[in-house]
Image (tube, rainbow, N blue to C red; front, side, top):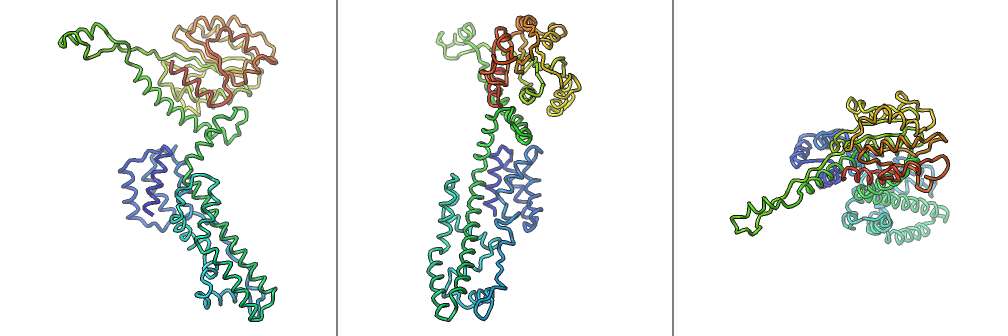
Length: 469
């Protein structure tokens, strides 16, 4: 059990749950004091000693089920272990009575068969499978295609080949004792069903071990699929998963960018200081001095279209920006459909997800109207253009579907001329930017960058590029 708990702790660490050495020691000390017999107590001890953040609870729950599921639920439903053998006639007795007699009196004659019939699939057989799994190298399983291979190895190690010989030998003895072919056939059918259920239990065990040992790889594959999935195709559950994923990736991106910034902080060689510093070495530049490179943090204005077609993309862009807001001088947020409104204050008063939900609600702009980019830019031009400076990066998230309205390109042009950069993120494919009521190509001459952002991976690349510059 100690080995399994250590493996569990390592899996939590690999899943980005921070666990110190002292916390691991505290876990084992607590388990020494408290009983391991009660599953809920055991789980509570692990949770209270190893998990510090509420955000790590889903990871803990998932890994606990993988590592200690044998304590929580059986591999087979309990009613499947019961055979309706009491009412089946078998000679002068029932089939169940014959099986009981076989178990009591023929242990030496039919060892493999008796063992097969004695195993409790949800009890002692679990331990048998664990032991055989260790001997057969189940810990090396790394591919779902290996489930069948290891299942057969464990099955064969339990004397499976000898079973067929013993079944035939038993059938011959029963025929010689006067049992009818129908009765012998019923016994064979019962044994075959038992063998099939045992093998299914072995396969379920091996599959569970594979999932437990490769949970992180499988989770990464699911995350990769989610990152590449179009915003338009996300289900409600995938939206919730994406929110957690974006938060984690945003923090990770921030840490990487902070390190990258430190590495880039050193500028060009300061020639005058090098000469003065190395006079003691006869002018040979043994010690180098560098000028500090000043890095200006961008001042961001985010203009987000929150109409139904773009709301998901705007949500995740805002989540990224405010997760990384320490890397910016300031982030000001505006939402629009037709009217435009500033919602920056929400993010200083509320938690990020709450602020985003409020910002994307209909309390600030008419949520049910048709997008009118020209009118929204005109209102921004009139009310907020004075706040745009040569240090301002304007980010527009929208599909540029203007519903045949006047795009008022001149207002967007003046915003672009005053800002340091204008970046447009469009959640539609580039192939559609010229189709229908899209006015994307009318705004493009006044954008410093335009990016297709149909999924979270593309959005991450763009945000990384913005903060890096």
